[in-house]
Length: 540
Ligand code: HEM
Image (cartoon, rainbow, N blue to C red; front, side, top):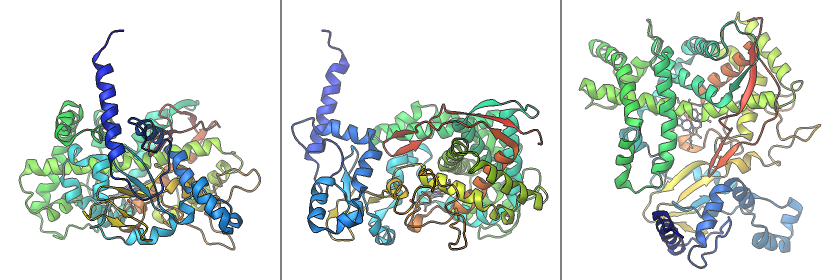
């Protein structure tokens, strides 16, 4: 048999990783996952790989509960502790051995204490940096000076009422592009790429405005950039720090960024020069909608950047800084909002039409008619069924299995709220969102056919108040939790509602079965090749 370099390198890599895992400092917490006992060399490795491939099953195993009656019987409790491996609902943390670090799952009972933990102990930036590698891909300033959070809260959200018309226009134009303006035949649309392009358009319209957001080359570059960030962050995660810049330089990323910078430059410079000439609002907040052809929030982004970065004066540095900030906002839109739009359309076509589609269509038609064909924040608030439908879709199909990940950055470690263990520096803590969202004690199945999906469960009834889409709670964690809860959730909820309303108002969909989603490690996404048959309605 011929020996090649792989037959030598691969066993050495497996041996090194196994040795590292076997001798890594062990936690005194229960372990959940396959083949997790550190036996002979190499036995950890398949266990860790199995945990990556079966994250959902492993997490559910750790969360699983016995019925409350059994839980109260002490002998069953002891047996359950040792044999059934149910931790979260017994108010215990557990950990899943992974390659990069210990991944500790916090039980729901500790969420309040978890949210209050000081940032000097548990830190989001550390978790983001390790997972998304933003420092290497978009530059260290994005998280060191994260003024886009302030911009989202103080400019984007308050200006939503004035920019809804632009976004409405963009959704319509995107549908024209995908389905054709006058074509009323059914067409197969790949739902994930469609959703990605719609969300990239929305982000571009907000930040760079028209006409650039309509430029086909610019649209292509934005979509390519968003996808490159996902792939590269996954690769960089497993490489040593010293070679990361090299890998990024060898990838197409910098080339795509350079082209985007060239296209965005004139807009940034126009806004910056305007700002220098005016002495308006030095605090960097915007209270009025922008005017003029460009119709974007570029002015407010430049103003926030300049007020939060006093040493930013050279024009070329400003161009680079603002483009990178735009690309991080674009990345935010190409993540959860893209998955949510794809998932809500898939839920719409796969759930019984008579239960949801018809009711949503008539709610949307009556609201838009009442307000003369224009969407406003006020009339979007009247879409109670639409609000609930999107929330149910987000509940059942969150973008990840766990959420609110934090890294332990205190060198002395972090002591768990029940004092059961001190988790060492570098570990990750996170909440088992998927398992909480799928817990039938919080969310009973639909009456009638027992399906998990109950699209109108969050709407108000005579006995219960509505639970709005933007709301976050210990049983609905899609927007995160605590001090880092998503600042874009108000803008995002309005945009999601308008997207679904416009899709339902303007299109007809053929029903289809929802085939299983793609799961890998913590990721849970619809398949990129899934198609939905849709056509423009004649009345439009
Ligand atoms: C479906 C849509 C969205 C979902 C489900 C979502 C969810 C989240 C989650 C789970 C977090 C982390 C919270 C935590 O760790 O506790 C987050 C953070 C964040 N989101 Fe969103 N998001 C969405 C859309 C957006 C949009 C459109 C924007 C911006 C324009 C945005 C801006 C941000 C920012 C800036 C942060 C970081 C906050 C911080 O570091 O303190 N999000 N989002």
